[in-house]
Length: 149
Image (cartoon, rainbow, N blue to C red; front, side, top):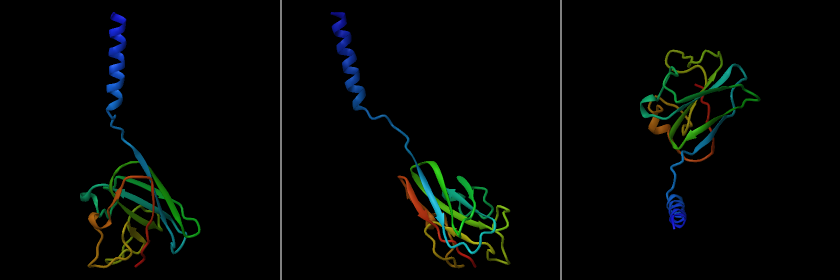
């Protein structure tokens, strides 16, 4: 009788346990590509942001993740691995002198920069996290336009 009760209890645990979903954290990858770089000097720096207060980040100190890639035939690509679902923004710098920061003239950048969801920059259209952010929930690819002033 004890064996029968034990078997019933184990079966009950299996049935109940299988009906509850275990909260899995799924991670995905995001591939970011830039084309039409004006030259092959330096590297391309890709910075990924996940909070509103971290962006814009002119000195690249508040990013969530940052990758650097070489340039081949006017193109550069990176893949951010193991990203959880969330809201992100991308900032890209064609870092021609490889110093890790935006080289500026008086006001405007001398090196190419780009942002997710941005095709042009103007004094009245500056990038913010809310303007550049996108919802991320699966493996994705995106192209960011590099803007030279």
